[in-house]
Length: 99
Image 1 (spheres, one colour):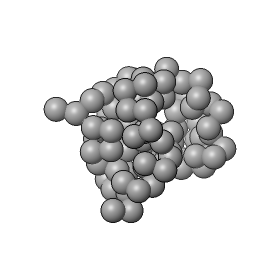
Image 2 (cartoon, rainbow, N blue to C red):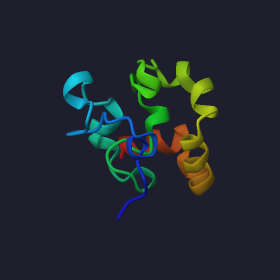
Image 3 (cartoon, rainbow, N blue to C red):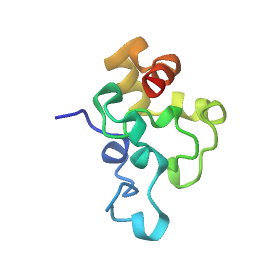
Image 4 (cartoon, one colour):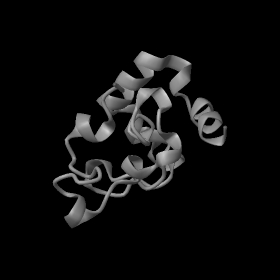
């Protein structure tokens, strides 16, 4: 079994079939299938910090570059980077999805 995904940690309900997915749509992190398995997550569930247009905090966060300041303050981001170190970097993510 994989690690906890962002939507589970944040309890946002924006995952496929989640409590808010019909009303607000599915978050791009939950549907980003090319990242499935990255840092042991489902789809982009452990790569939310690198995926454009995620809905963290109830608003669209923009590009990964734009939202980096917010992500660096996020408890979930801290957990993922602590568990995976350089394996959870933007470079590691890019290599993973391009393989």
